[in-house]
Length: 147
Image 1 (cartoon, rainbow, N blue to C red):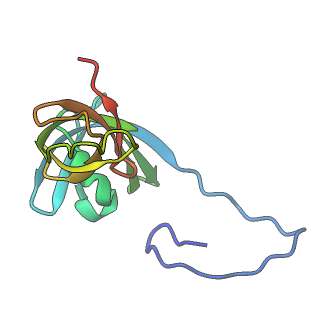
Image 2: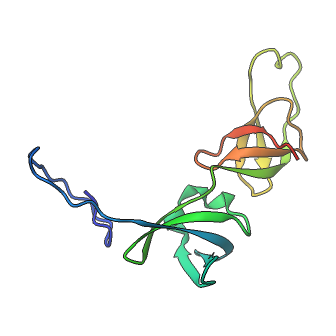
Image 3: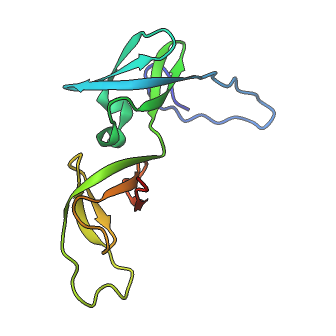
């Protein structure tokens, strides 16, 4: 179990006939505005209230936040617990190593760098300047953008 307010974990054993009250979490869609140092600012699209969250609450996908992006924020009694980004995001490849001849026959990947500074593995046909779709959960290449 995890205490939703403090974040501490507790190991507890329960019998099968015992019941545990499930915490009710509210989900709210909010628009990402900007990052200021260690804090990210989101805006409620209905009330226009701003919510300032610590970047550590978002975790590693914080690199994929883009201005105007709609994210889902889980709240417990008004306290934010987690931020969920959209499943994929479109970014531009700024650096991509050239293809080694003869390596295209197998499904090999080459390192590349995205416009947000993150390094990912790209298929050989992707060159610098190409817009690609990236999975925000693990930072992996999905496909070439269709725009």
